[in-house]
Image (cartoon, rainbow, N blue to C red; front, side):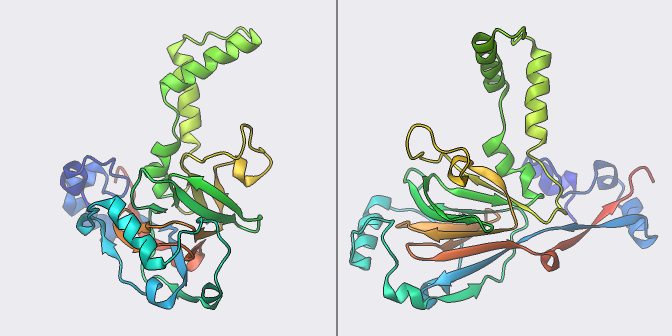
Length: 286
């Protein structure tokens, strides 16, 4: 068990997966609750990842992020192009050997999120994305983040949240455009709007849905179609397929394990009921 007096305080986290503070300082009471059945089961959904591609490449062991180092990244980029023997555009058509790809279900399930993108964050990521049964589309972006309800309070939340500064600016622009009697300087209004928007980013960890966010999408034209998924960089799904058109990309599970995810490799991310993690919630005030 993680306690608020332990890892949570050490890393300055919010402690959503930690024991309530009351039990952190009353461990015996917490164990008594467990032994006497004064708890309920809570099933946190997790993400299953299946890689499809070159059997050798997708079978490579993952790298712990704290062990991964980028040394002379631009030289690595040139070496990789030489190694592949091609300088084709990332959105080239699949090669014949890609059509003979094998699949591998990763032994690790993601409790929080999966991140897909170039290892060097300053480089644009090229991805083919398909959400559920919608048509796939090509996207240039700074990476794709897919989270569970558990992870919706963390990275995904901070990518998408509205700041008070942004809300105030939008309210001001609304007033100037419509002349609707709106007191955009009222801090209570700004706080209420920001809080309502941000609260809706968080969803039930037991919900059999994942939330995806395309970070910093490069739009095709000035006004992307709002009716297509390309014009909606955030949403929820049950199944997402991502094909890499990147040169030196990675697929990272829960900010820890990093798998190589280069040009031609495909990832299927699913959320299935049988993959849920059974956790315990202690009754409060007992």
